Length: 127
Image 1: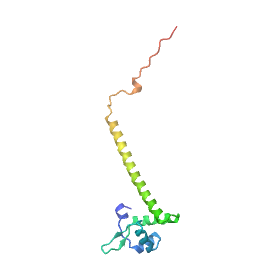
Image 2 (image 1 turned 180 degrees about the vertical axis):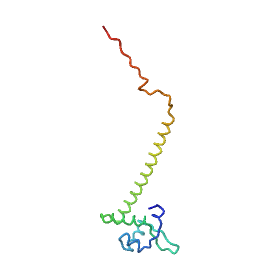
Image 3 (image 1 turned 135 degrees about the vertical axis):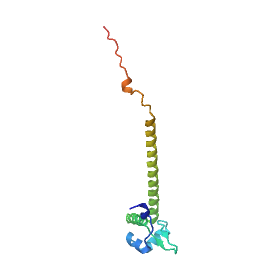
Image 4 (image 1 turned 30 degrees about the vertical axis):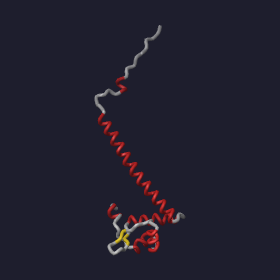
């Protein structure tokens, strides 16, 4: 599924609630608590995307595990931060790899490898 379609807000609150397995009033509570932020039509009606539905299912999983809504909000915030840091780390790793590759390309190709340049001297044997 492409990202644009995943984030396109198309579901009315009753359909989103059914897909998430919760009551529509629960979605309103989640919105008031700042757990979900559905898009709005020009007339003010809520519209939910597939991304919102996935988030609602994650919230449901966390509450089923015993977390209250404040705990859920904290976990979601921490998960978002971890995802952000993982993306930043991946970018740094990619940049470092590109820098190493650039240094390797700049090596002088006429240098003699170390194992070919070593000369072994034998000490004269004592008689």
